[in-house]
Image (cartoon, rainbow, N blue to C red; front, side, top):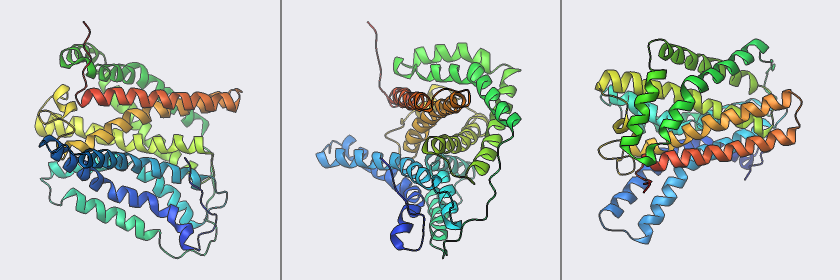
Length: 351
């Protein structure tokens, strides 16, 4: 699946791909509401075919928000001399990829502020502004940009920090999450063991520092790299990095501030699964399904994309590197699906 965009922005049809990401992001909360309403009808014994279809379609539309934005960003990234509005459209599309995790972050922050403004109102206002900015006049003149390379030492530091996080935190954390289908007892037992590693007084501050470094350096990379054309694989790496930057900030806010400080609870099984109502049947918690699934998917796919770049830089064929990234992305989707099914109630029992 791909989108093709024109290099000129004068006609209405040429503007349409630009408008899709902010529009998809704007409609994202309403897709979740549609899913929750359909599930409520199903639970109330009104399990008609229409209810099931509406639930599936609504959830698919929610996930499609990030997919549409990624495809648009990929298309605009191939324009060699983008106009001002095309460069803005590319960066808006990359930002819109993070809509699911941004919506969760906004909801958590407003909850702690006792909801002074309904999160959907604020959400619509922000994305409507982005949408309207894409409608501003544009004469097709190229954007005034001067692409600059990323300093080698910063790229190396970003990679070393990533490897360190994988070894001391990410591998353990994802392995723990893969225990969701085995049930709470197994999950808690594994979590208790792993927390002795990444929650000790030395490694936990190190993990937090490395994560913040990854976010800051990653966003710096995004700003510089989006000033130049890139292939679709590289754009996927950039887009997944944008999602992870906001996901990590939001996740740390949820864990350290919302859960441990504001609510005074542990971030264990109940917190992750939205107990007692669960993730699927709750009108607020349903936003966590795309948020978590895409978080796991993008972190693994981003690593595969980074490995692709390393392979090409060290002389391996682009064809092999591309296939490795595609394979890694497929594995990322499978891992994310297993974890999410477990978080939503699927259980595997061994007899």
